[in-house]
Amino acid sequence: GEDVEQSLFLSVREGDSSVINCTYTDSSSTYLYWYKQEPGAGLQLLTYIFSNMDMKQDQRLTVLLNKKDKHLSLRIADTQTGDSAIYFCAESNFGNEKLTFGTGTRLTIIP
Amino acid sequence: NAGVTQTPKFQVLKTGQSMTLQCAQDMNHNSMYWYRQDPGMGLRLIYYSASEGTTDKGEVPNGYNVSRLNKREFSLRLESAAPSQTSVYFCASSARTGSYEQYFGPGTRLTVT
Image 1 (tube, rainbow over the protein chains, first blue to last red):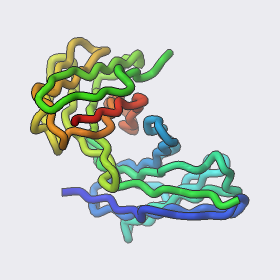
Image 2 (spheres, each protein chain N blue to C red; image 1 turned 30 degrees about the vertical axis):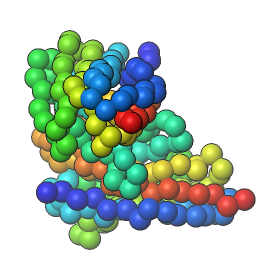
Image 3 (cartoon, rainbow over the protein chains, first blue to last red; image 1 turned 120 degrees about the horizontal axis):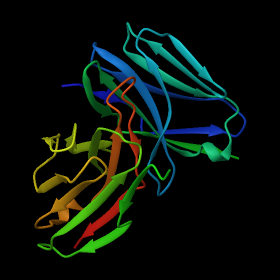
């Protein structure tokens, strides 16, 4: 079945850029998503990218997709303390509305 | 517009007790989902419902039942709770069109002793 993998932890200094990586196995993935989970809260959709795109930018967030290597990344520019959270990568494929989630990457901001 | 709401926020059960987790959405979405979240395991799908009156098993359905009461509401029932069901439970909904993104509720933290 489909598999989505992420590293568990990332620490970044305040003001630097954070890059969170994700790899997936399903070559028929259609949409790839990034969700943010703050402590004690549900998952909040940050952004998503369609599989025929290489890049999507939304304010401080940049998503890069390398479809050949099945690699997705989320770059957060000028990382702030409010960016501390767990970030989940997820994928779906056409006609299948079920999402497959990664294990999440806990982003810690160092003052 | 509250989005996806879940009740209760917290619950402690003894082994063998039963309970129902409630979920409602006000976005007129067709599809609804129940997930559980455990440390280091991401989110795992328990059950989902593509439309009113239909439900299907996900990755980890054993020990759970669901009811899609109407388009807005999707409940998850634990008939005989076990310590292995200690987890955080999330409900989500999606429109089944476009980019299929799912919107999540705030979660229910369940402890079974």
